[in-house]
Length: 452
Image 1 (cartoon, one colour):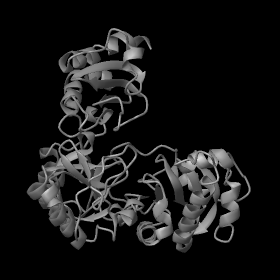
Image 2 (cartoon, rainbow, N blue to C red; image 1 turned 60 degrees about the vertical axis):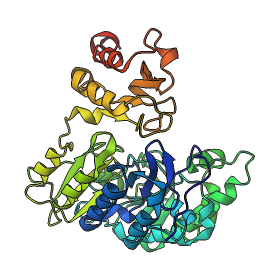
Image 3 (tube, rainbow, N blue to C red; image 1 turned 180 degrees about the vertical axis):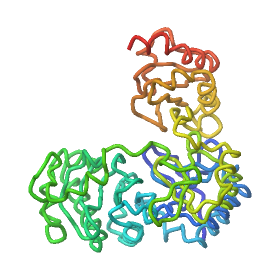
């Protein structure tokens, strides 16, 4: 399969793929979309080999449950694409690839407390999106979610269209947001999900075109016109929401919030586990492993692939090892994986920074790890420290408890700010060297944070 070298400049808001590689600071980045997030160990081993042979040996886990190969030179795009195609991870063309943004419960089929094993539904939806050319005009970040509930639920994940199981046969269809915030549209049967998705995609494209400034995401369109136009178009495929019987407005579907619990994920990076992994009922055991900043090496992926039968890629930038070997935890630990909920590195977020991004000017990962080593007491009291290589804040564009924004090799440090806000929020804490910025953050607990 021929993969032409991109000649157009990178645009903000675009998403990379295998057939639409993105040129960044360390070469081309290829995002591999894995249907239902299920990656056989043998495929993982072969992908690791591609990263070592053709790339720089670095692999990223994305927030949308995908793998990203880094540092691929232009001359290697074709052999890498051919190898990924042979494994079934390449679409017919870039347009069909770009719309395959389907997030699936990572513990589907592993968790007997879930209402439904949604892997089949997610795969069918993935294939329908690729085949339905009318949907190829959807914005590149437009996303879909299929969740069966249980321990690996996606209640806290925000997306454009949600399908959340309410029993063993039906889904709650809602638009634009997390489980708690998305606008409920109605109920559909599992076998109708692909048809409902196709109709919703078309409705989104038609309805947004009627506005002078068409929203690019479903939440914006729902805010502008409400859900009634969607309900009218989808009426043959969905049943109306049940009469309100409680705070959620889903009184006749009592299992939904019971199974999902709170609207927050069980943990932003790790699922609960036992001494040798986590097992529910008769399902296979599994072990969750996170990685600092969602990055691991090809060597790490290859070693872990030898210690399990398959991986599940999560939206928390972590991997689930299914049916892990007895030494899987030891192997993961030896390769620097995060295995404990109390690991302070879970509180740190950082983009690729210099070397991995064409606009980054500092080694953001080194800075973040230095903060983990020096600012432990602070990290115990905050939700997130974000180290951004520039003001765009690609890794976390929202507010963090502590934000470091790099510019020209130095950092601005701010509290409760977004990247780029530092200069205006924290006079006197701008233009710090990386070492001084780390020291500044380490001193925050007894200063600003203690009095907040």
